[in-house]
Length: 309
Image 1: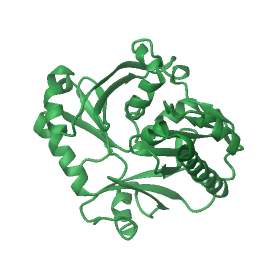
Image 2 (image 1 turned 45 degrees about the vertical axis):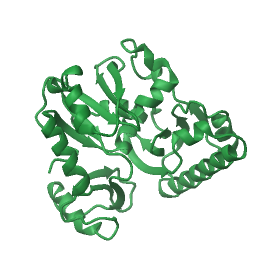
Image 3 (image 1 turned 30 degrees about the vertical axis):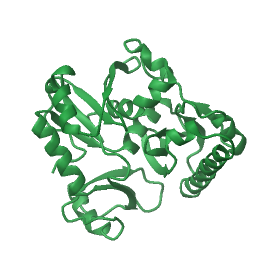
């Protein structure tokens, strides 16, 4: 069963992600000596029926001419950090299948599994094992096949976010990145383009945007405490990597959110501005923070390099 791997591509690759009521389609062109260029970023209504939506968009959005990349939503897979197994790289996934069997909430016998290296820090070699149950991956593949749409890659949000963070990193320092969407918040800590740490925060963007008064204070405190604990855990595990700042994706409607983070964290806090790292000339609508927030996962997926995960 294909998982996180590149198959035979067509004339181009298209990132496809789904939200509560919309589906986002993004294409990005990487260029040698200039910023990656966002070729297109389109959104369509979505009622939860992926098969019907793909059929409609097959011609309307030229899905039949492109190879699609999809991302599994939070809760449909597990990301587990474990010691790297012995043996050849080609056999690591199978070796880890039995290592993680008691660490995940579903049978691993037919689960899709892939391995992501964590750069060594002088201690035991560690890896991320990404595991998704067959009951999630197989129907997704069949849906694309039935619609006659090529599914080139299945990825996860942590790696999509890593791709965006890599564009903002300072030379010799790590970066903390926090992005909220319909599934909640995701904190990643990256260094030299590699993912070292990821933490899901059970507060969706819509809750932050709509909260007022005491409820807003409770949510903000919850996020702040989770961030503090995560940053402390990272510092204990990877003290050799200094973190330059916390980069926060747009959270439209969350009044005072960045100011709250700045007052509660010792780390500098900066609002994410995609125009600093992406050429948005072909899609000026992405200058709008609301539009950036909506397309963030698809943009990160579209930045995926063909040579790696």
